[in-house]
Structures are given as C-alpha cells and as structure tokens.
Image (cartoon, rainbow, N blue to C red; front, side, top):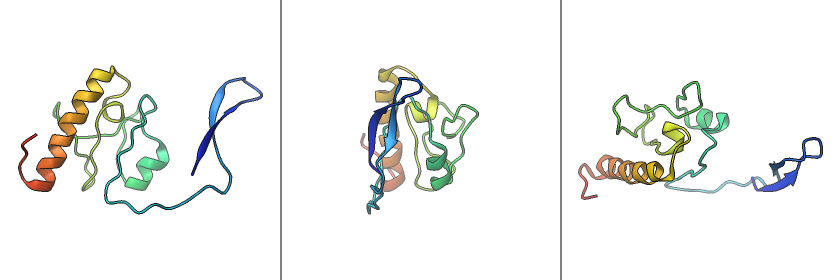
Length: 111
C-alpha cells in the first residue's frame, strides 16, 4: 500500500496513514526492507514466518555475526536484528549480511 504523512487531530503528531485502495502486488526475486528504528512489524514477521524477540527484533543465530534467520533465504541486519543503534553499526551489519548472503548463494564469498 502507499502511505502518506497525516497529522493526528487528537495528538497533533504526524503519523503514516494508508492511502485507501492503493494496495498492489509486486513480483520480486529479492526484497530488502530498510525501516530503521521501528523494529519488525508484526505483519512482516508473520508473513515471512520469522521469530522476533520481546523487543520485536528479528531473531538470528546466537553468534555475534550471524544474519540468517531460521527461515530459509531470510536474513536480517542492522536495526531489525539488534534494535536501535548508530548508523555505523547498520552499515557494518549491512556489509556483513551481504557477505553471508553471498556465501549462501555462491557457496563462497569475495566480499
């Protein structure tokens, strides 16, 4: 769906509101969701069948640099995996996650 910023009349805060009748389906071989500072949306976790922790961070392996979820072909990095943090961590995790995806797809990596 398309979203637009709207002011909430009761609180005065700006929020994202769905544009009516804007839903559409897009075919894709790869989806990258960059949603910083918001954690994982419940519907996204449900749609992908992935586990989240008590803070709605996506669960990955126990090791410090494991980005693969228990769901085949689903990886997570940055704020979605570790929660809100500095952008330098997100950049590092994005690069490390790309390395893990490359190894998964190719069996090795040059990244």
